[in-house]
Structures are given as C-alpha cells and as structure tokens.
Image (cartoon, rainbow, N blue to C red):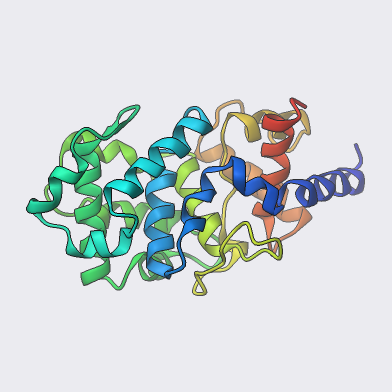
Length: 254
C-alpha cells in the first residue's frame, strides 16, 4: 500500500472504532460511569492496571473493584486507612490481588494529598515530545515508600524497555479529547502529540502486517518505532490509530 492509501485506510478504521459503540465492549466503560475528574482518573488507572487477559474478565473484575470502593473511588482513596482494608479482602485479577490493591490505594492517596494528583505528576515529568519519561518518574514516585516487592511489577517502566501498554492506554484515555466521546480528554496539561500507542499483541501484529513496525518484540523500542511511523500520518494525534490497529486485530482478524 502507498503511504497515502495506508493513511486513508487507517483513518477509515479510526472512524469505525473510535465510536461510542466501542465503549460497551471495552474496559474504558468503567471510568465512563463517573463524572468527577478524580473519580474518572482513579477508576481509569485501576482498570487499566488490570487490563490484561480476557476483556470480559477485565470489565467484570474492574466492576468488582469499584463496588468494593463503594462506587466512589476518589472518596474511598482519600478516606482510606487500615480500618477500610477489609473491603479489599479476596480481590484478585490474575496476579493482581488485594495486597497490590491495598498498596495502590495508599499510593494514590499520597499522590493526591502530597503531589497535586496524577495529572500534575505526569505533566511535571513529560518532555515536549514524549510522556514516556514521565511514566518512569511516576513509577518511582508511586513506589517511593516501603511497599510489597510483588506489587512493583504492576506498573511498567519504559526506561527498562517495557512497552508499558496499560499505562499508555490509561494516558490515551485521560489526554486524548476526541469528538466521539470515547477518550475523556480531561487532562489539559498534556497534549495528544506526546502520547505513545498502547502496543499489545493485536496492535503489534497489525502494525507489522502493514509494515509500520519491523521490530519483532512488543517492547519499548518497538513503541518508539511505531510512534515514529504513526506521527508521520498525524503528528498532533498519532495514538488515534490505536483504534484502527486494535480494531483490525481484535474485531476483524485482519
């Protein structure tokens, strides 16, 4: 496919999948249940954290997380102490369990109380062209106090060559402001141009088939390569093509 034809093809798929109908089958439906900015952020972050495996299972377990938090995630985080930990007992999604969730809530509380919230942290450490350094700094801050060693694996680090798919997806949700109402666009201190594609099996396979990506591993170097290709199509909003790549792989078996 010529570059112009490939761009037109991807734009068509973006229109198809960057649509409100997408919400009903995607984990993004969980933060869409809230109105308050901080509640959307926390619901989105926790949902993205467990977003691996079967999408139905992800949605089901994200719902259970919200229920355990009284369906008021910001208030629960800010009021959380040892007396509330029984609400989390027994929670598990694959390798993420109540021990991890307990620490995540404590870390989020500290970020909102002492560091002006998640948006402020990411905006503080993002560069002009990338938010990947900010993910690294966010993880350092998140785990800056004593924590269970098992929990650290649940936030990936681009500085260690991770694709950081789940946190890049969360950032797309928060930063990208689309006319369709799928992504939220509630973070104003960052620009969609700084975002990276949430690279997973589906998007990686399709990107290789379309010759947008040569690297075989879905790692941090592959994210940089794919970003460069997608920014040639739309430097202001390159991650919109995540809808096209994911849809072609997961929905159309392209």
